[in-house]
Amino acid sequence: MKKLLRFFTPLFLHPAMLCASAGGASWFRTDRINSLILLIIFAAAVLIYIRLAKTGRPLFIRKLSGLDAMDDAVGRATEMGKPVLFIPGIQEVSEIQTIAGLSILGRVASYTAEYEAGLLVTVQYPVVMAAAQEIVKDAYVNAGKRELYNDSMVQYVAGSQFALAAAVNGIMTRIRPAANIFMGAFYAESLLLAETGNLTGAIQISGTANPEQLPFFIAACDFTLMGEELYAASAYLSGEPKLLGSLKGQDLLKIIIIILILAAIVYLMIDWKALFILKILETS
Amino acid sequence: MNPADSSLIEMSVAGFLILSIFSFLYKDNPFYRLAEHIFAGLTAGYYVGLIYQTVIVQQLTIPIYREGKLELIFPALLGILMFTRFFDRFSYLSRISLAFVMGNTAGIFLIQQLHGLVLPQTQATIINPLAGSWLLGAVPGGMIIIAGVITTLIYFYFSKEHKGVLGKTARVGMVFIMISFGAHFGYTVMARLSLLIGQVKFVAFDWLPRLIGVN
Image (tube, rainbow over all chains, first blue to last red; front, side):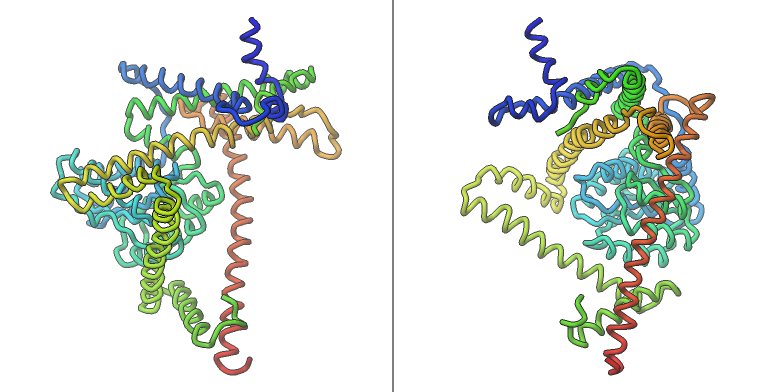
């Protein structure tokens, strides 16, 4: 019992108290136990859901409207004989939105391989280019269309944000792609790209987790994936157990957080001792 | 660019390129193409030099040779593996570097989000909505914060179809999201306008008067 108390006591203490009692550097940051517990719950939920998905149990994910439009967009590009332009954001591969964008690129590339439509991917960083080339190549090989793939499908166009916007705007007005898909981290160039694409008459599907750019995408694109929908998209499109399990784990975490917030608020309204919940959530 | 310290030639190049880029508002034209290619080419070249100097020289070569930080050989090897992409036979080796970066990113991002966003935001939402004054807006403000967070979280719940009570709650969440987007839109447009004013000011009040000899 004493051992248990010793373990759980830091949960209810203020980080400053812990630091003071630590008296120097240590291997374990006790002020981050709350993060560890949340991480363990999340990881356990993800692993359980992955196992469920692998056993063949169907895991329901609600329909995301923008994603169904991708199939239509590629179909339109095939009919028009024009390529699909895909931009996986303007950040390095060390940005999680870029990884989500690349994951969606894999699906789009498998559609373009299947329909034999053209695909052009423009990037701002060499490592993203290498990753995108691998992903597109894999999609074409898996679709049995290896001969349609070439490395120039993925192009490094510029080394900075607005140079990329200028180059991509030029590509849009000259090639006039049938569909523009923007998935990843976008910043001030979002409206420049989306508005030019709109003027060229392309179907536009966008997705980003940068809230300040979402209004521009919503205004200028036909479909927009907002925030977390960007991350959910790859799971929805692929139906892979690992991605579905991760998405389900996140949903469970949201429910836990909602319950925690509501319970704490009710408790706070009737008893000041609920403050201990605030202490648990304290971050340094 | 500080007009006071610049020569007329420098200002003229800058002014010409600004006008060339603005000419895209009319339609794609040779001036825009020229500016676009100069811009794209310059940035690509500039970043090659910048990355060589700041990463390869300052963060790799100097620490290894002068400070004896041999552990940096590991990231250097990962970087070298990227060059195997030029050889079909060994190109698969570059996937090791890519997998390292992507896996690392996902792991770090998870902790960052939990510790930097999820926990602080959850904590900030746990407030007593009845504490404070109705007249000063503390009570309605608190209620709006709680309702906004919970309904928005429900909007991003993917495991159930948005129908019935869940659908209505998600719709309220959507209203909160749209109000937030409206605020973001206005804020960003204001920032862009200030950028535009800066460029127009440079062309109209700094460059052109100097070019025609008025200033």
